[in-house]
Structure formats: structure tokens, C-alpha cells
View 1 (tube, rainbow, N blue to C red):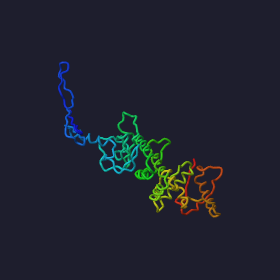
View 2: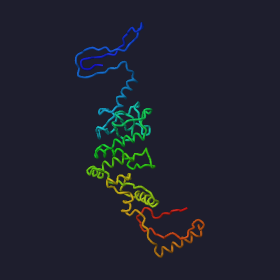
View 3: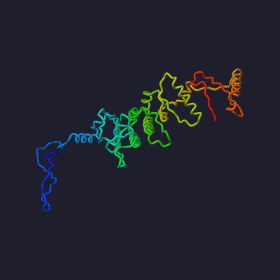
View 4: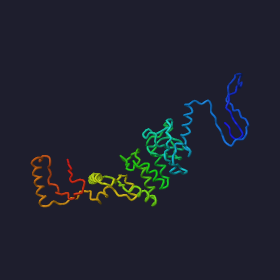
Length: 317
């Protein structure tokens, strides 16, 4: 090791201790001509050891790390970059569910990966599981959920664009630790808080429709009809999670209703009522034992010719 006006070599020396000759580690220090840099030389170093040493250098966060691409956002609590074209070293830890595409730095060290073209750094993260080298998928999501709280709205748009295939991510159950929904939700909320960023995003992505929650059977019926209507449209819409309504987007059902995509029921005419009676007589003759009710259902006719569905049957046990 050399720096400034000194140089140091690691050597071994023999010393007599308790009448025994013992090899001891020592440093040989010499003065030299001043040099305005520091140099560390290690030898001998095998090829495998050098590869390990090289990968360890890549495992720490610093702005010049070759794994980092373009800087999207950087602050005291963390940073977000695009992923560079430098291959992910085999020796570095990665989240098994996501492979080695994006990278997650925690407390300045690589601890996991993400499925996006992103390098996400959370400088404040503390890992309490000392027995596991790499992050689980839900831990990688938690890190990103924390990291996206701080970028400005314009930077949030860049991050959100990298996560486009998860814009429609919704929890599959009440507690879904593997869902990217909260990360997308926080990014959308960051964008919605700035008029300029919101206008920029909606101008670039005009054809988004959000999906409100489906609760009742009536909601399910409308959702099925609206999805069928969507398939017939020349304009290609992208369905996204409900938080996008904060950016001013319409719901799928509202857009379908405005375009006349839902069925519209009306009372039958006198001629249509005769047709009902014919159908009823056939039903009684062929399936009388299957359909038993005190009062017949209400007779309705679908009038809307532009609807994707022109009829529907519901079987009640």
C-alpha cells in the first residue's frame, strides 16, 4: 500500500518467543517521493479470486458503479437509476422470483433484485434477517415501496413507465404481500399531486381506463359486458388499477356506458309478449320439472343494438 510520501509492504518476520521461533505478521514502512494518490496492490491473486474481488466492488452503491445507468432521482435517503447494459455478476445476491434484471441496493449494498429496468437504492434500510443473504420478493417490494415515497413527480413518471406491465396490479387477497399495487399506487399519487406532471402523463397516455372494485353480481355483469365492449373498439385502451382515477381517467364501465356499450332493457310490445307466451309453453312442456317458481320473472326486451351482449341467461339454483 502506498499513499502520499509513504509505502507499506506486508511481510512476515521470525521472532523468538518462549524459546520458540514464531512467524509474525509485520509491516515494512518506507518513505518515498510524494504522490497525490493512493495505490493498493494485492499479490499473488488467482483468476477466481480476482473475479470475486471485482464483483464485490460492484456490490456496493456508489454513483460510478458500472451497473448503474441514467440517474432518475437521487437524494439523501436513496436513489433510483435505470439499469446499465453491464451484466449482473453471478456472485451477487438476487431475488429468486425476479431473476437478475433490476437491482435493489439496501444500506449501500446489493441485497436483491426487481423485475424492472431499474436500480433502486434505499440508504435507510436495515435488514434484520442475518441468516438470509438475498431479499425475498415481498422484501424487495417493501424496499421499493419505501424508496418511491421521495422522488419528485416528474421522476415518479419515469419510474412508473418502467413498471407499465404492473399498472393493473391489484391484491389477489385481503393481505397480498407479493402485489406491486402499493408501489404503483404511491407513484400515481406522487404524479397526481403536481398539475404539470399530471398533464404530462395524461397527454402521453390518453387511452387508460381504470377498474373500480367489483362487489355485487350487478357489478360483475357490468364488468363482463364492458370487457366485451372493449374488444370491439378501434381505439386500444389499457386497463389500470383504480388509483389512476386520481389522474383524471374514466372507469371502464363509465366509458362503456357513454359509448352505449351496455344492454338497455325495455318492456315488450304486444307482439313480443305473444312470443314470450310461445316460449313459456315450450319451457313448461320440455323443462317443467326444472323451473319452478311462484311468479314468472319480469319480461324485458334488449333494445340497444350496439351493445356487445344481446342476451344473457342467469341460472339460479
